[in-house]
Image (cartoon, rainbow, N blue to C red; front, side, top):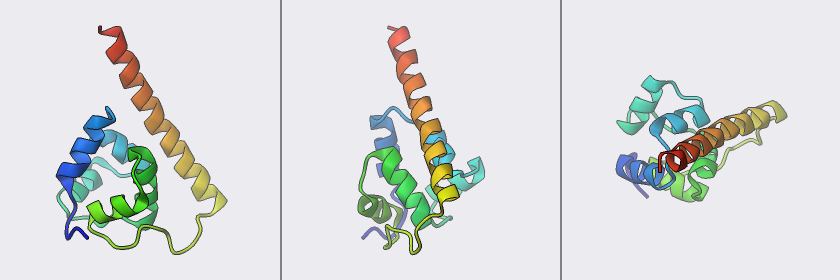
Length: 109
């Protein structure tokens, strides 16, 4: 298990998926300041955030938890319907940003 947030791995994973750190923040609901704290290993990533990052980065919850330096990749309690909808909306926003970036890259060719 990683003992700290693996910023290098996250940066490489984002780049491989043509995503930015801001996409991570939008998906998880982090402010820019919270995002900076996460990358500096000064904010703990919650189990719910692990699940969101797992979907965004196409990696298992275990891999995300390991790279975040935490041991529990799943939530202790199931998410409420409202929380599930909120998570899905955040994922859609992240996917739309990804698609927009891909479309922009195609137009610039």
